Length: 129
Image (tube, rainbow, N blue to C red; front, side, top):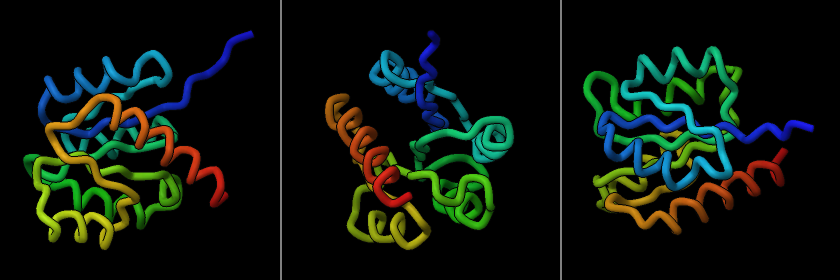
């Protein structure tokens, strides 16, 4: 019997951050990597992730704009979105909620906190279904 892992889409323009996230989560989840908003939107058409980890500061369309676009669509509008950013002022956190984010993790992040918040947001999304 094959057990399919839940998919986590990681959207961050810094490859070393994506690699750290992948190392942290790949034992329990299938990690899909995107380095731009455009790349993320393309992958969202192919995959139905269980959760999206989203950086704010990226070239071109930033994480806030991408989150708004995801929330406006039909396919992934209810997928939990956890912002993961060095922009850690209260205004940044509030804006992440205003555009449709579910949670916020500050960079640099602790891998244990990342893993716990991913699992918690996945549980909360099941409760609200």
